[in-house]
Image 1 (spheres, rainbow, N blue to C red):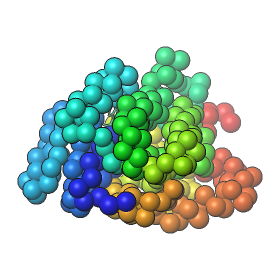
Image 2: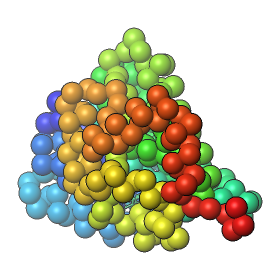
Image 3: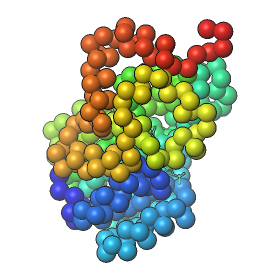
Length: 267
Ligand SMILES: NC(=O)c1ccc[n+]([C@@H]2O[C@H](COP(=O)([O-])OP(=O)(O)OC[C@H]3O[C@@H](n4cnc5c(N)ncnc54)[C@H](OP(=O)(O)O)[C@@H]3O)[C@@H](O)[C@H]2O)c1
């Protein structure tokens, strides 16, 4: 799909993969709508984009709240029209065993990425279907393909996002809307692991065989996925190799994840 001239809505655009993607889409002539909660951070990304002569708008929104997502939808559709490209990159959540997670936090863990992506797609889908053109991409976690111990609520929310993405692709099969699940490896320069504390130390050691990438490299992968209308993409390629191995030899994958991953005390 062509990016130049397209209206691109990017969630999670105040940092990490979402911010890098917004910058890359704008650099290719996309008109970018930036969505996240922190207004100041969004304004800074907006100014950075506008200083290059490209168009960008900041819409501070808490996507865990359906009424805020509906208001965002009304504002964007009213002021700019239906998006051509929708990128779901809003995401948060600490890695904990289920029994370490306060029960009231379990619902919060589903908010981003799952509900954020479901609400955002829901508010724009009728208008996108009407123009019968578009590309929807979810930034999914490798955790929704390869699981590991000590991150139960986080992983469940990523499976929900991946499930939403796959189900949407099935729903939209006969339309001209394309749906992509994008899987990045560990991002070396994202705020994710500083904002979600005690999480980075739970990455299974076997993950060291997959090179880290920058958020810009992830964004370049997303651009490639849009241009090729890919249905699924892994960056870096070593992640795909791991995914394939885990599908062929699930017991070995389970064993490696257990041995190199986080353990409960006493187990
Ligand atoms: N970092 C990695 O190594 C990595 C690897 C694979 C997959 N991923 C996945 O990729 C996604 C993005 O990760 P990242 O590294 O870019 O993290 P990040 O730098 O922490 O960015 C997360 C973005 O989500 C936004 N956000 C969080 N809650 C929100 C809400 N309720 N409403 C609207 N926006 C919200 C944040 O902005 P505000 O705080 O301003 O709202 C921020 O812009 C996550 O789902 C993560 O699991 C990350």
